[in-house]
Image 1 (cartoon, rainbow, N blue to C red):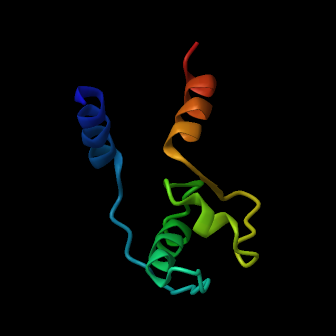
Image 2 (tube, rainbow, N blue to C red; image 1 turned 45 degrees about the horizontal axis):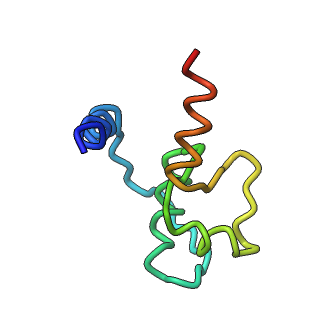
Length: 85
């Protein structure tokens, strides 16, 4: 659990407050998920990390060439492969 706490502190340190300047409603199956797409797009995020991948990936309106949606474990595998040598 200590590693998780350290990771959350790091995210809080490097995170940026994003104020949406436009709303893009992708009409996801779960309406409450739309805000995460809006924040990621407004923040020019390259990734949306979520355990709830199915609600995002199974929507034909969400086709982004440079926008990846994946689970925390898959993202960490990618990040470690890229950054740990």
